[in-house]
Length: 209
Image (cartoon, one colour):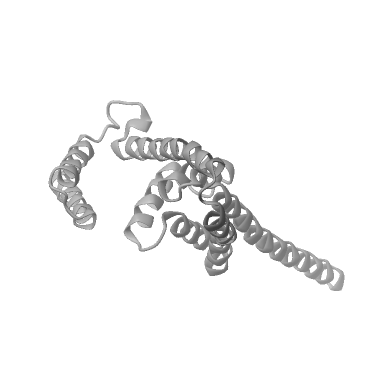
């Protein structure tokens, strides 16, 4: 009847309005999350990984821990800074192309503003002892953040995050050791070492299946 149709149309209209509001909110949420990452990821690169993990995995639950490990791999395989690649990946996975644009813009905006201001200040006051003291204090913190990220990625890759004997991936540990030797002792190109590691892992999976 007419009453039923009117009620149904009203509900559909409310659902549509709610859906649009939620869509706009997810863009804002992506923008703000990566704005915080871009503003406080001093040191860039791997130093940003704890912040990205905190926002993406722990706070908003956009990715699982395993998916976060895949995110690191994909970000390393593609050109560009790892934080920006992560923002684009998460944004497009959560809210499509516009989500990727919102997350990426949020990630680069603080750096764009801060680097412009800091570059001007540094060129003007680079001989000041206070500025050098601030930079000296920040360096150990950046190294610590990079180390934490590296340890977490290694534990996830080796299966040590599961805390069980069966979860340990011995072949990943062997591949890691081989890659370390190639990089440190023989000074091989990192890209060729990554490809070599991928081939070794692929061969292992083929032979053990």
